[in-house]
Picture 1 (cartoon, rainbow, N blue to C red):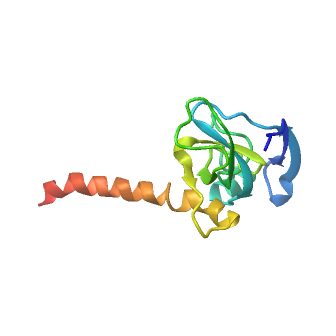
Picture 2: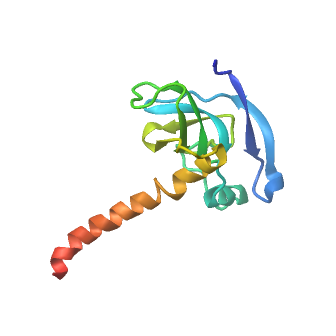
Picture 3: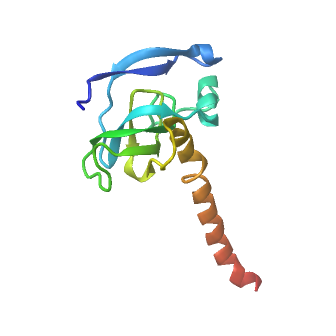
Length: 153
């Protein structure tokens, strides 16, 4: 499948209620070094997305101005030096913004295989909630316990 040069995305025109979200068109982003480009089938909606729409969560300087941190879809392009992923693979990802669009880049380390038995909506809701956020917290807590346990024993 050829990647078009333009895409639809949801634009946030100011801060406020959901009515500030409007359909817009723009250039399809190109994946940077170590990124994949995903043709989005579904995007998750989470608290940071809502806070960004309300104007209470500033967009980090290196992130996309388009709302959306979680997506599920198919890899359609690979950036330079991207390893471990192939064109056509079905994935879900925690992005650096840009998920409310037809195409969204994601760092390869924030991409997960699409879980078997999941539809697009469930796959898109997964990345921030469990594997990348909860798992990171569990690993950090275990590392802390491992450091502190000898001091208490």
